[in-house]
Image (cartoon, rainbow, N blue to C red; front, side):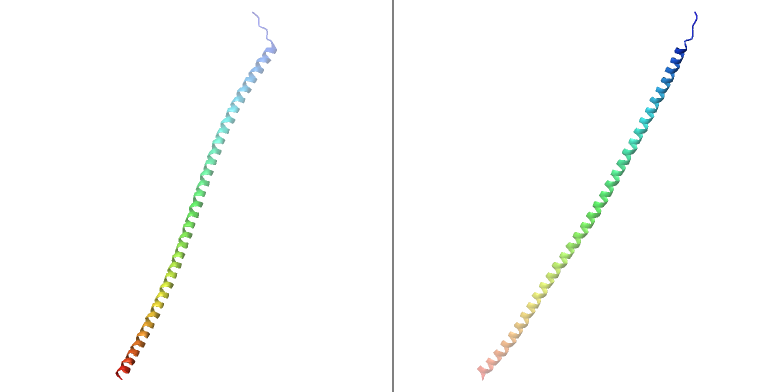
Length: 127
């Protein structure tokens, strides 16, 4: 049996082999690109998560700082209110004490006057 070499068939086989090789290379490249993209997506997700967590931490810190400031401000207001109330109370006490003292002095003066009057009456009656 004699085989004749058909150059067209050889060229066609070489072409098919080259196409197959190229297709496998394309598939491999696609897989690598897909893997790289997945890796990049995971990195982006991790970065977003980290950013979100740090934002949450910043917000927590900001909130706690605001809360502390508000608490301190409220304490200062309460202290000022207490001081004001104490001052008013002390003022009232001083007014009451001075009023009582004035009444006491007037009573003593009145008693002294009554005593003099009673002595005068006694002397008038006796006289």
